[in-house]
Image (cartoon, rainbow, N blue to C red; front, side, top):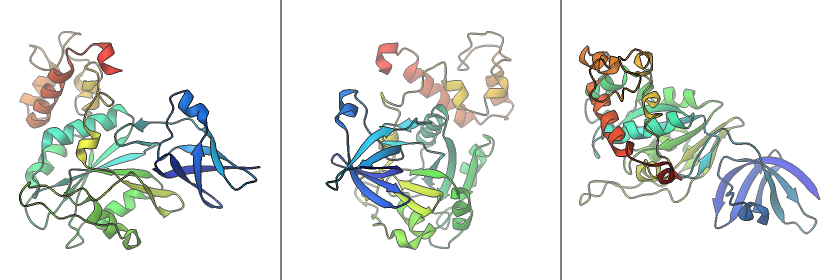
Length: 295
């Protein structure tokens, strides 16, 4: 028997492809994981065992620093949120839900606005420049901003997400032409793109840099696996944080109360009104949830 350490780069039908310094091994997980209701995820750092008969098994999943269930991926350094300025048009609520999920999971959100060769994106830029979240504008057609995005990926594990058709796959192909990923066309009938990514897979840029092209935005929706509790939600809006201890009432929900420092910052134009509206909608969705709803 031979033991090796590696990272899961792909999982298909119970088989896991683990990259080690010696190459990629196709492995099955030991039954103890199923018994303990633990599912190996793409991004997991694992110890594998190479048996004499040539089979490989995952013996141990090392501690995860974070994970998402949908899409199923772990140990992400940053979540690259691709937003097209048109075809399809952006939804600030979906963007803000995705940012909140990342913040709540300890993942750095980064916004990339695509298709800027087709339409001006200044209004969207104005909303998010007040948040302190990194934002880039790109065009896969003109090449604008591609090198800037490539630089922020260096030495990180980055997951890419966004609505179908926003240009995730085109961006990844621009970052590294060897990826040669299949791109989808925008459906004129539905107004959205065909899903071209079938499963989460880590793609290697260099020895320390991985990117993941994940299924469409709906897969990272705020569902029962990724719900942000109402008491945690204000901290997932990073521009709120300086004001959270300045409200008149300690029980302030930052939605409508008098003496709320967050609302005061919104009225002064320090915090975006659109971001605050997203917060209110998200708060109303979770305010009445009980603990058992979150399990």
